[in-house]
Length: 300
Ligand code: PMP
Image 1 (cartoon, rainbow, N blue to C red):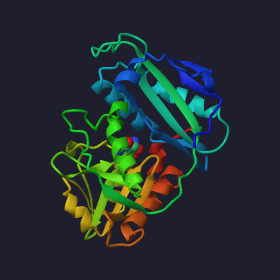
Image 2: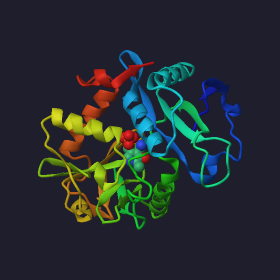
Image 3: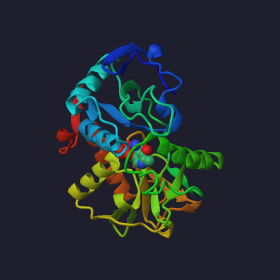
């Protein structure tokens, strides 16, 4: 559940939560032309710190570039705005949602891409219940690279994620496993997918059509540091059925073990040994207890 904060940052100003409104003819509302991020601030020994903030903002800038939107603020201006915004909210972990969108302007499909607006919201983070996920392979294929590129985090692309997620949840699963048009593993509705076989960590490469997740990049770095071999390559759908371990990664999700795909249990029932190592290392990193964490944390 969303717990409102006092203010939302809109185009350089803090406005009261309930006053953070847009016109109904906002272009992005009609055409799904907006880009966004999902970021978290965790408690550390030195107080609240935002995890990989500059990496998230760099991805936001790349997403905006794909959609021809010029960001009116520099990365450092957004860093300051986000840490200031979190600072207005008191103690406790936070979720941060930057959104870059097209405001009121033309109403045709030849969008007025000059009407760029930026909003930053932050609210109290409630940890979801931790249990291993049961995945369902979705009948919906992941957006094709050449249609709505998954490498950009565009709001419109999430009609694909939501179609798949809702179908999976209604069928009693935790999330959907989406395949690419060629039938390879892409990702879940809002998380990347990893599998372990014979002590090697595999994950689909970015060219396969996935969001290059920040958590994914973190897990790859932590795995290399722990001496676990990592391979980014196309992953066949059937490989998920013969995995020793399977897990998903995301900012909101964290690292969650997958118990089964299409009711076929993963070999390791429960959290497997490599998943455990990586999950613990990730928890240490976000809370500032890992040697690699220094470069990843922005204090509030
Ligand atoms: N894939 C999709 C489609 C997502 O929405 C997300 C969540 N942002 C992820 C993967 C995981 O990315 P990250 O680790 O950067 O949160």
